[in-house]
Image (cartoon, rainbow, N blue to C red; front, side, top):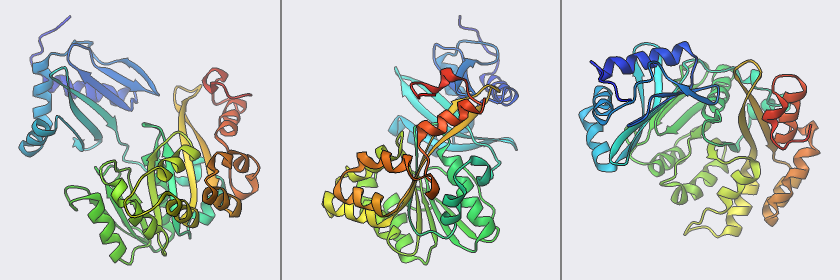
Amino acid sequence: MFIDMDSPVDFFKKLLLDLAKKNASGLHLSVGSAPLLRVYGRLSDGEGGEVLKKDDLEKIIHSFLSEKELAILEDKKEMILVKDFGDNFRFRINVFMQKDSPAISLSYISGEITDLDSLNIPPVFVRNLLNATGLLIIAGPPASGKTSTIASIVEKINKEKRKYIITLEDPIEKIFVNRKSLINQRQIGRDVNTFFDGLRHCLEEDVDVVYLDENRNDFERALPYVLELASGNTLVILEVNAENSIRALEKILNTGTENLTKESVRFMLADVLFGVVAQRLIPNRENGLSLALEVLSSNFAVKSLIREGNIYQLDGIIQNSAEEGMIGMDKSIKDLVLSGQVDRREAGDVEI
């Protein structure tokens, strides 16, 4: 039932504290429903269980959006941004309209950056990556930890190499501190007008590493520039929403552009590809999440299949190239089950 709250904003603060206490990764607020937390990949009830009213959500939204942001929400009916609450709470926030009422989804952004060596990416792949140029694709479905993995890669380079790094993000999630490297983080719409403009700037800069989060608006127009940037002495790290390596490559190959034929895209992608890391987060036995990885490293056979348009044969190369730092998703999940981390029921149709 609906419960009148003295202060929806204070209630919101209690929900954030409840999120921290339960080590939740996300919070969902919608009119007519009680708050829901995302805890280790599963939804559970939030603190109190009060059913939210439209007025409650509007007050909560007005408590953290600026006048300029409220105007954008009024115009676009949705927006994604990052906000800090207090000293320890940083969230990626999606505010949108549904049934003529506001809704909010918050995803917690940890201030810590996971050490890359702890992610079980094959060591030979990591060693080659530190001095690589070309295109590295980090793929996975939404909420699969792609941004965290990319942050781990960037921080590894930051700690061990003297590189000039630029990120193009919308919005900026992880905050880096310069160590051996110099890192400039640019938010689309705030620090640079468009994704396309940011890419053109990178082409004019003497940059060693560029991180591009997935941009759905300008990507078709920007793809030739992404491939051109990766063809030089730059490592381009591209985030892609796709469930595996083949789907990620297919997404790029199927992107139509006015300036490039599909054959040209195939040949350019084959030439510049360094590799693909695809990932999933799977609930484990310790009430946490375990990372399952698929790693494709580009070699002569991989390049040939991409040029020929036979990317569906890449699975066979992945399965037979462990010595080159490759691993298939099914094997990764199977290893998690056999090691006792993940229950067999979470493995889906993977043969154990």
